[in-house]
Image 1 (cartoon, rainbow, N blue to C red):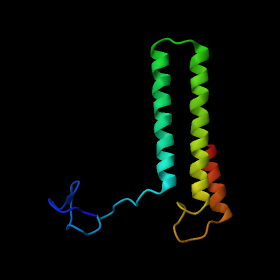
Image 2 (image 1 turned 90 degrees about the horizontal axis):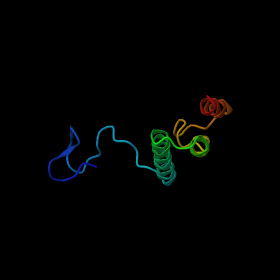
Image 3 (image 1 turned 135 degrees about the horizontal axis):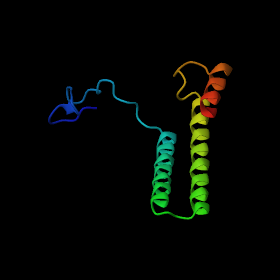
Image 4 (image 1 turned 90 degrees about the vertical axis):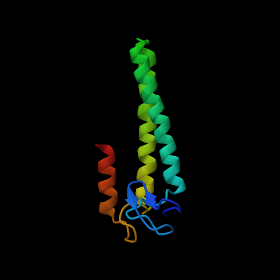
Length: 109
C-alpha cells in the first residue's frame, strides 16, 4: 500500500491507501526462512574470500568451501520443495510431473 504523506512508493506515484502498481507479493514464512539462509550463505562466502586473502591453510579453505556448498544445496532443496508444493509454479494451476522434472533439472545444472 502507498502510505499517507508524499503519495510516492519509491519513484512511482500512487494514491495513498491504494495498492502499489506491480508491487511484489508479500513474503511467506518460507520465503523469509530462505532469505535468512541465503544471507548466512553470503556471510560464509565472504568469510571464504577473506580466508583466501589472508592466505589461510588450504584445509581450512576447503572445509569452508564444503560448508558453503552444503548450505547452497540445502537452500536449493528448500526452494525446490516450495516450488513443488505449488507456491511458485503457476499460481492457481496444478503442478504437473513435467513441472517437477523441469525444476529438478534447473537445480542440478
